[in-house]
Image 1 (tube, helix red, strand yellow):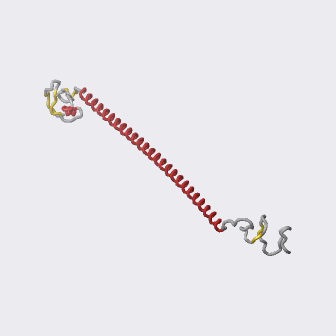
Image 2 (image 1 turned 90 degrees about the vertical axis):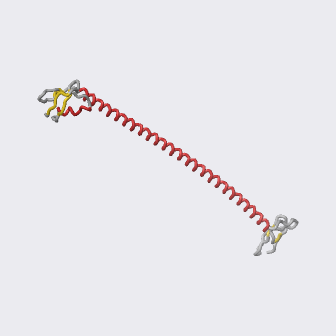
Amino acid sequence: MAFNPSGPAICTQPYRPFIHRGGGFSKNPGFVRGWSKPKNLSQQTQEEEEEEEEEDEEEEEEEEDEEEEEEEEDEEEEEEEEDEEEEEEEEDEEEEEEEEDEEEEEEEEDEEEEEEEEEEEEEEEEEEEEATNAYNCGGTHGCLIHVYGPQEIHSLRCLEGGEIYFVRDWEGAETCKFLR
């Protein structure tokens, strides 16, 4: 069946030509009778590809910038966390030092109290010894033993059944020598 330009565009041939509204037909879809020849299709596709590449590069740069910003933010957050951890460690160390100081002060106070108690006990013992000023020696002479202090502590041995070589009276004079 032949092509009828005034009738409907029906073609039974194996190749159907590109038909433009402007009339006429051609195997070159970029060419229309009465129109200026458009740019080469390969040039168009090249430019489009270049534009797409530029857009892709811009997108990649933007993504890289975003990644860098995120990395910087992450680094800042890590630094802040490290600073907070260091501050907490310093505070913990200070608290531990304060606790240790308080414990040392308490130990020192306890030691001082123990020393004072020991001194008080020693003073009380000395006062008791000094207060014990006269005993009956229990010997044949019946004389009294006077205790003047630590230098005469040997005179107490008379009460414990030991040997007495001399005994001093109230004025400190030697009164007798005996063996018990």
